[in-house]
Length: 312
Image (tube, rainbow, N blue to C red; front, side, top):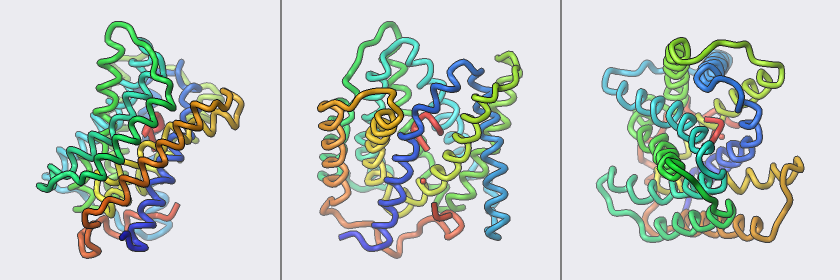
């Protein structure tokens, strides 16, 4: 059975997914702004916030070693810049519902691959729970149609979502979630700015876009750090099951702000996602030992994005 430490990690993972999923409506405010420029600015703001947080709390930042560089670069290239690029491009060739449905497959990928990376068998109930979550996301999103490369781009988005967690497992254990978050934000800021200079025209954000960038930056910082705390305690496979909460939270926020109506299909999808999370997190296989080395205390500011997750 999960300990209080594991229950707190589950809560952190749920909060992360809910924050990221609930922030989906904000992404619509940035559709017309240059992609790489916006990402660079957003992650730059996030880096400043992380430094301010660490300074105020007197939390030391651990410098990465040479062996940490490949993982950090992979997180930025795949899980941050790559994820956003594929997600936005996919929606030019496919219905958002299809992209959401395919993205919902990431819990199943994590449940299958993460244990293999740790040289152990995937837990059957975790796989079952992840499968139920995927089914719930498909119901929730309503499927959708695509043309040309739409389906391929949606699959690439899903793989980037899974990579965001898988690439981070080792480096989070070594230097802590807060340090990983800061260095990834710094790398993403510099890389995004360099690419934007070459590939995009510059223009200043409007007041509306500045608001969206600022809010998204704050949510990303909080979500980034406590998501990795949850992964460090639960393991990538169990934490991955919680990703299914993202589209459910997005539905709740969309209904609350009046951008879509509440339907029986939506309610059914949320219920199925919830059932999958319960099944996956109550796996009979042993929970990670309390002695297992997880993120250092610096990785866990109490607060928990997304997707992942459009706000990543």
